[in-house]
Length: 447
Image (tube, rainbow, N blue to C red; front, side, top):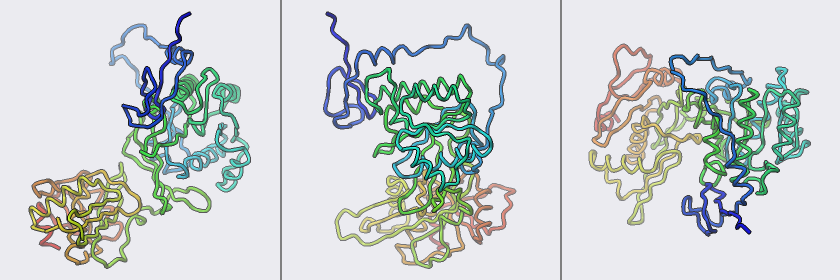
């Protein structure tokens, strides 16, 4: 009798091993290996392959315009790159309670009000719970259908017979395929279900939204192949102490990956944040240790407040802590200040906070970080009508940043009067008074 083939698969990253191990050698997760049966392996390996008859010159390929449908929510459309693309498979991830289901239920209600038939397949909540939340959001419409089902075959059967224009799966970790013996949320189940949804979306030209939970490390739970298979990956995050929620695009085959949508959690659910630019800074503070900069989130400029606290450390190894800013870049900036300006920061604890839960990745915030640190260290407040924009190199030079004209227009529209910037290109028109600085020492002289 032939011995059945068996593998063990990590439920965190999809790594496969011939025997069970306690700690995954790939991702480091403990006790995450489950046995994958031969039947499951055969089914996954038999995924159909579509072969082209012959290669075609790229010059002979006809371009087709991307068909986008407005969702009814401007912020959601911005994150998607301009609207919902027909036939696309979109994955929305986020931590529990951040508002993923609330957001998509709101979008479903907006589309249903435009006479579009929507299917909401829920595996985590009952129909009554969804109806209560929809009533609070104002998303109750006869064109919105709720299906309390977790078997993917039954969901797709309903979708094929109902002539729906958009399908929402809430969530991918609760769904299962009856063709596999593994538990819902396992790597094998997630792979198979995602493949079936992808094939259905492309064949029927119907958009499918998938809600996915994230791990404590901040990644979508399940195999990373899930993110490769979908067309768009959006992460929904927000600070638990703030009402601001940010929908950020990490992958988009139909648009830019640098766009964000900003929402505000209210008693009526998630709403598109209005006048959002004024929610990330305050001009009332006259205390030292804060500075304002203007970031570019995709094509959107945002004025953001940077807070710094420098205090003498009672320990031989001072602490460096950041919230929303790269801690390794802070270490570089502190070393630069000690070397170029002679600030003895090696005996001080340094704390950096970006207001509003914004996570900054672009280097144009460097100048504002330095200004806030020096302000706190010298105990001298900064003029609240000034913004700081510029990247700082390891040699202390201040370098140009992209879209400087858009940043200055945003600063001017928010009422700021002055800006410290690197050397400006010619023919830039702005209503704000600019002071050009080419090295960090000149920033200190200005302050």
